[in-house]
Length: 130
Image 1 (spheres, rainbow, N blue to C red):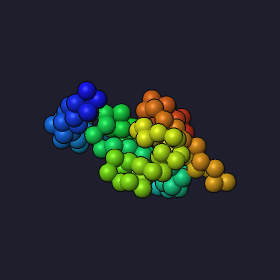
Image 2 (cartoon, rainbow, N blue to C red):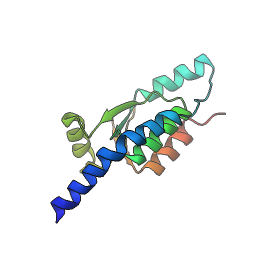
Image 3 (tube, helix red, strand yellow):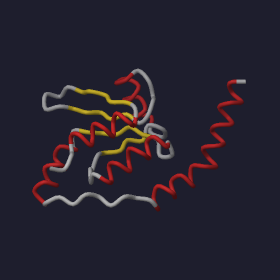
Image 4 (tube, helix red, strand yellow):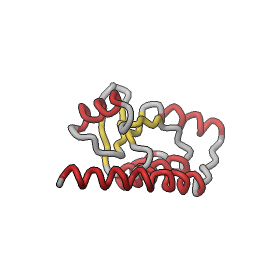
């Protein structure tokens, strides 16, 4: 029974995935405009962030849309098709649940933030416009 359920959802993702990606592309928000100096500072801060995601996960799409709206060049790591990224996510969190934001501080300490709502709230707070 478990195999049948997995096969059903895998087929559903294969059918709906392209439509979800098309909708994401067609509804991309305009990014915020910052001064070049402010954007350079944001770009530097984003180097310590990485988003582990699946391309057609609706919660990952939500986070990517917010990243675009905030003009954040955060590295996206495909945990679905890239075994190394999947293993890093598993080692860091104990699960392969996405989306997950990896936050590395100046001391090299890593924090993992899961749940799309929590990630969006974190990004909005950290990169809010003055």
